[in-house]
Each structure stands twice: as C-alpha cells, then as structure tokens.
Image (cartoon, rainbow, N blue to C red; front, top):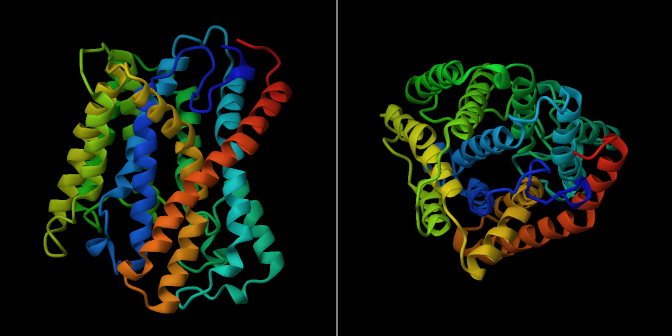
Length: 378
C-alpha cells in the first residue's frame, strides 16, 4: 500500500490494519463523548454519568502500542528513527491543530460561572491556540480557562502529548527490549498504575490532563503500562477463533464505561480496583479478541470502517462543543432531560464534523505532508 493510499485509520502504510480494532476504537471514542457530556451534571468523579468513560484512553494506548508494534517492529532495518517520528507526526498532528483551531473559534461562546471567557484578551487566546496546536502545555499561570487543564482550548490534547512520549520511548528504547524485558516493564508499570488507582488520591486513573504532580505521574503510568502492554501483545499474539468479536467487544466497552462509581467516597480503593481490572485484564483481552476476529458480513465491515475512520477525528474535535454545552446547561440551570436534544445534537454533530474534518482536511493534509516530509515510499 503506497503512502498516498494511506488508510484513515492505519498507523502505518505497509500492512493491512485490523478492521475490528478500528471499529472498537470508534465505539470507545463515542463513549468518551458521552462521558464528557455528563461532566455538565457531575459535582465530582463520584457522581459522573457514564462513570468510567475515562478508561477509553487506556484502551486507546493499548491499541496504539499493539498497532505500532505490529506495523514497525520488523521494519527497523529499512526505516530510521527520524522517518518513524515523521510518520507518527503526520498521522497524529493535523487533527491536533484542527482541535486547537476549533477550540479557539468557539471560545468566546463558552462563558459561564465556571469560567469567564470575556476576561481573556485576543492576544492571550492567540498564544493559547499556538501552544495547543504545538502540544505545548499551558502553565497554570497561563491557563486561560482557569480549571487547570494543560490544553484549555481542547482538553483531550493531553493524551496526544503522552502519545508522542510513547512514540519517542518506542523509537529509542522499547522496540529494542527483548520480549522478557518488555514483559518486565509491563508488569512493573502495571503495579505502579494499580497502586496509583487503589491507594492514590482519587481512587481512579482519571488523570493526565493537568500540570500537577499526581496528573503527571498518573498520566505517565497510564501511557507506560498500556502502550507497552499493547506492544507486548503484538509480539506474542497468535489469533484464536472467535465469532462476533466486534459486537461483543463493543458491548463490553459500553458496559465497562457505563458502570457507576464503585465504593463511593468512603472506599475509594474499590473503584481503583475496578479500574485496575479494566486496564490490566479486560482491555488487553478485548484487543486480543478484536485482533483475532474476522469481519464476514457487509454490515459489520461497513460499521467498522466508518467507526474507525471517524474515531480519531471525533476524539479531537468534540470537546470544544462540550465546553459550549456545559456553559449552556449551567447558564440555564438545565437538567439532563431538558438538555437532551442539545446533547443528542452534539453527539451527532460531532460525528458529522469528524467525518468532514477527515475527508476535507485530515486526509488531504496528511497526503501533502507525506509528499513533503517522506522522501521515499516503503
């Protein structure tokens, strides 16, 4: 497959990608949108609707490690570190820029009691846009929304920053590790993340989005375990026979995301244990089953193709409209039932916008960057 025919969902250009994993990525992206919608009605993590939607990020990291390992582990005699990083940049960064620009365009329509956007000057917004587009975290003194996010114009950009960390770690270190050594990294990182989840300050791993000590530590542990676990899976993977992998996997992702908070404020460790079960066992199993399964009917094939195509753009463009929805709910003191038409419009509109961004912006820009930045086709 040539560079100019690069699939929207493929992370590399020379091997067929896993169709079912593409579809599961899309399902997880939609659960993230729904999780963020309910932030408008939550007072804390304890009463958040679609309570465990934040775990989709860990699923994304495992998928990323699996697909990157599958695509590149046997190519290092013909590809340089520089070219690998260029390829990852081309795959990921156009939508980072798009998310920042969309966030800037709707910023002044998002005013509410939680954040007074009218006090932010045009030059400050411009600098914030450049920082977000360049994946440079905003220092607390320059966080224009005032809620502590690394990227106040498009919150989910934080996970892309960690994705780049994973890219560099893979290129410089993880790919060189023998499988047993990689398994040791996975085990130790898993123990660290489990300890953070069970005995940490929150009783969950919904961290990584702010420049605080616990967010940086927790976010790095999430990346290190899940990306390395995906990479390890790609090395030991031997497909098994499984029927209905996409539909079973989709149902599992929805159920895992929607489970209410466990243990409440008095037993935070219980929820941390649930998070550990998900990232350490359920998600690796789902990736294994998804990679093993085959799509045999047109409905499943088309569903996986569409969901895979819009998964990453959806993740990167929906959140500016979550801010807008949040402000609308808070300014009008709406219940979820009252705001449901707006919530439904946000989900459908975000999916439509993601598809338009994919076809009119992301794919053309990536093809342009491929021609300019990659000298040869491999």
